[in-house]
Amino acid sequence: MFGFDSGDVYLAMVAGVIFSLFYAEKTGVLPAGLVVPGYIAMMFGDLINIAVVFLISFITFLIVMKVIAKFTILYGRRKFTAMLTVAILLKLSFDYMFPSLSMAETVEGLKAIGIIVPGLIANTIQKQGVLPTVGSTMLLSGLTFSFVFLFNMF
Image (cartoon, rainbow, N blue to C red):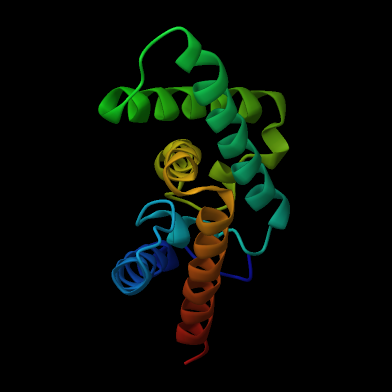
């Protein structure tokens, strides 16, 4: 976790939102939701957790688009609700099965955000594809992490 404290959560979230907004305005590519880069940036000290978040996101995307979509019509809010619900259930299941990998204990204040992030990522993957979503999210997360790290140096 590189010694970040809970006060850095605020800084990372605000910086991530601002960087995401400017990036989306300039490129038209969405970084999986405005709060996601700040959340991922706070996990840069634990790359396994980042991989888990993206794994849950991709599994969520597959379940919603390949399984649930066969039984119901999904569009707009219905699709978004399905993405969030499946992601939350998968995240809770994963945290229950592997409590040592749960992000909630690593950074104070991220538990509430952490349960919706995989759903936000999955929803954005459905809209624009895996590579633009993951690439832009990781780029902006790295930028946010660097900003917070440099801020703490001074």
